[in-house]
Amino acid sequence: MRLFIGIDVPQMPKILELLELIKNSGADIKLVEPYNIHITLLFLGEIRDDRLEDVKDSMKGLNFNSFNVTLKGLGAFPNLTRPRVVWVGITEGVQQLKQIRTYIYSELLKRKIRPEDEKDFVPHLTLGRVKSYSSILNLVNLINDNINTEIGKFSVNNVILFKSTLTPKGPIYDKLFEVKAIDRGGSTKPN
Image 1 (cartoon, rainbow, N blue to C red):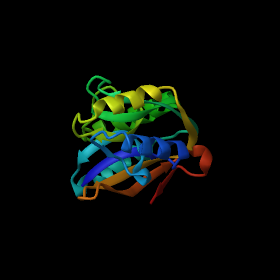
Image 2 (tube, one colour; image 1 turned 90 degrees about the horizontal axis):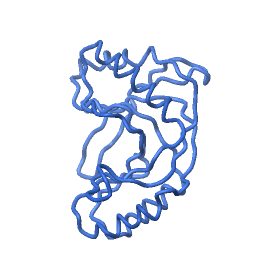
Image 3 (cartoon, helix red, strand yellow; image 1 turned 120 degrees about the vertical axis):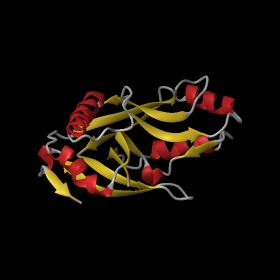
């Protein structure tokens, strides 16, 4: 099964507005469905079914207090010259996200599970993936116009293990397990 560990992001009017602007830019881009928007902490890729409990175990010792994440500005990976991924930036909550990721990453390695994304972790929220460079200038201009746009703030109260099933209509995400913030009435709660 294809797994990742992440944070659910509530639907926000400004994100919906930005998705619509990107869609109307004429760029050849595959947008993330609003109900699938999340922050990926670790992408595990294909994990055998018999290793699922090991993945859950790597999360069970996680202790964190709820914290705020502030979303601000559009950007692109690897850069605006050749954008492949269009994202929303995170200005508040970055350290907490990195600490949670570091803890789980270390626990996964102890169980001989190596996540696919070992590169430097830059917390962000993916809005879409560029498929071709058709009308790319419109997209780059849109990103530049919204580089400092205030998008919103939300509280992180849990970290979730998701199963991602790829379908022709896009991925379907199922919550398999979650760890709640310790100040929100629980340590771990299977879903």
